[in-house]
Image (cartoon, rainbow, N blue to C red; front, side):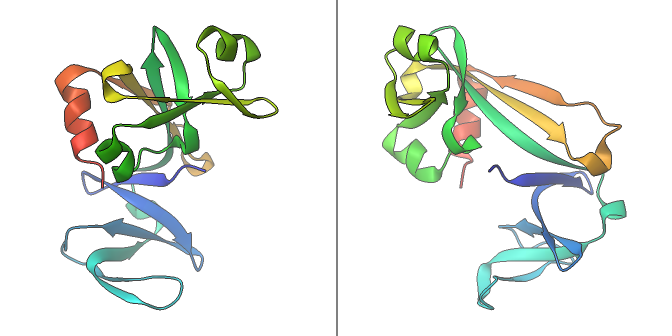
Length: 159
């Protein structure tokens, strides 16, 4: 399941529902943010949070990430690129199409799940699709395509 993001005061944050409200998080200490306290009660000194109401955010959305490989867009496995993926130059894409899996030499993991690991050099582009949550149903989904230097910069910012 992909993370939820929000736009708040002109910036983008990860957001989670908690105790009937919302918590936004940041790796940078910003005005109004406190040290993050995880579900086990551990306080973090390098990760920060702020409680917000739904009316304080401009939009809450889910991001789906698709990787263009050999002229075809495939969904990124788990909808997220992790820092280790970037460090290891190994990105897992998947399809549920037997025909595409055959055409692009994917490995069958389970019924209707075919995966393939590719390198950055094989990635032609990344498409990020933002789908607003039901609370923001009046806002249309949007997509952004990253290629070349823009893609490399985006990958370098992944934490």
